[in-house]
Amino acid sequence: MPPTITPVSTAAEFRAFITLPRRLYAAEPSYVPPLDHDRRQFLDPKVGAFHTHGEAAYWIARREGRTIGRISAQIDHLATGPMHEGVGCFGCLDAADDPALVADLLATAEAWLAGKGRRIARGPFLLSINGESGLLLEGQDRPPMVMMPWHPHYLAAHVEAAGYRLVKTLNSYAFDNSTGDLAGRLKALGLERRRAGFAVRDMRMDRLDEDAEAARQLFNASWAGNWGFVPVSAVEMAAMIRAFRPLLRPEFGVFVEREGELVGFALFLPNLFEIAGDLGGAPSPLGWARLGWRAWRGRFTGGRGVLFGVAARVVGSVSGAGIALILVDELMRRAERTGVSQVECGWILDDNYAMTSVVQWLGATFTRRFGVFEKTIATAQAMQGAAARG
Image (cartoon, rainbow, N blue to C red):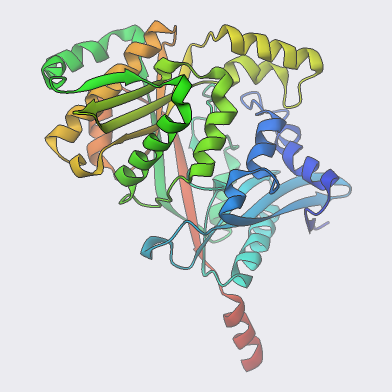
């Protein structure tokens, strides 16, 4: 029996859309659901930061009364320039192990994008490349990590069977403080000498909005030339800071300055799954109380570097490389002081050979691989023209 795919239009359908992955993958031993509340903050058009500069539609697939799949289609109006010309995106792709179902879900998203004049479907993204990016290809058995998606092994094959091709691979690496290799390698590079002339400071919690805005501007300028780049909006930065503020500490933000000018920034987020993973997607009141207590204690063993950048004018230079090394060193020093033994840095484009070689030389180990897929689709105008000629 073919599935019925319908748009999400009611509060009950939106709840079903949010909760589908944890129901669908309940038997998967390596899947840990994110909090429904956090997913809602991303996806709800009433509160999600993406919706201040983009538009999205959601669908649910059902068969014989069971919810078996979901997908989104979205257009980010901040995604401009030649690399984004004619591109629309899909995301939130979760489905039972059924290639026909996945193909139908993708076709639904494609039709919506075509109706908006888009000729390329790219994804998956939640909902932007600045959120959770790519479809998990390797690393399903790794512990879950904040702001990194999880997908079953079969899903990539079904996406390719629906006519999509892999266009970019995103790799994630982790630094481990327990080995001691990183400190030795940084010392060999003469890092203390490279620090001369630079001032390093913490994130200022009493001036958090000011620091976040300065970091956002530096990040956008630093990465503007990268594939798929979409600027982080002020609203998105504020939403991220607001969502993680209970977990943030001054030392989690690293600011490198030279003569009063911000030239480097990095932000570390502790792994929320460590304190929320055993509570399920929808904790009970007692579960929420436990989460609050755990967040207050702030004991984490792992986390992720989510923002990292150097001033645009020194990108690719010796000075820029020195600033990047200072940022890595500071992140790991601060992580160690707070009890964190492992910091995951992801993602890095597979063809960013310079960055990949540096992190590997510094002793980072590969952890996960994600894929971004694309398909050329017929626009609504082209389909109408073909129908008229027929």
